[in-house]
Image 1 (spheres, helix red, strand yellow):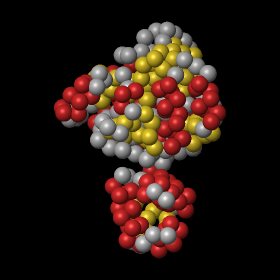
Image 2 (cartoon, rainbow, N blue to C red):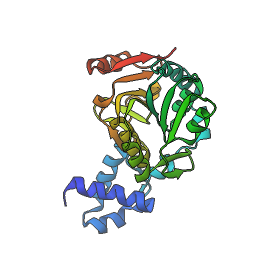
Image 3 (cartoon, rainbow, N blue to C red):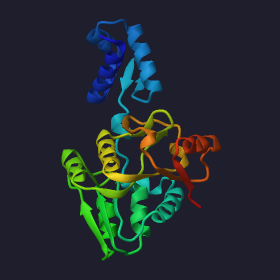
Length: 253
């Protein structure tokens, strides 16, 4: 078995069992415990698991879905400012998609009541937009994640695939210049990828703390983004590198 394959299977096993010991992994893969320890050290550096005394534990369960109540108060000021800037990208008659991020919910709150079609997998976004008579709201349906009040899964992905939109407004947990966009939850990552695929233009809404980080599940390469809206704390070097990749960076006030 190749090293990369063994390490991928280790991650799968840890996520399935939530925790596993070095001795057990050594027997399963027929390698020394020292080899397994090196594997775990590498995988921890890649943020794919967390080492514990004598083994490793999954980070997927703890970090997969943060409750919407917790997300609403995390970097709330930055998210609101980013949402206000994002609304400037939206024009009457647009067909857009909003993900289930807190920032997307703030966008829904800030939107004026105007002729607009909004596709979303977020219950909170749909409820917020239901107050605005001129905005047509389409929900993806799918499997409900109770922590984020969002729909994911094959039904949500197929539903998105039936449409075409002008603009996709998404957020994510990690933005890496080389490794791209990522999220803690694999199901959310797949839905966000599909949102990007059906859009002419993708606008990423993230606060500066997300840059340089990687989460568990890959969404898409950074080149798939057309514009990024963030706060003024983004490092100048990072901003320059993004603009060199022809990605427009807007700073929210």
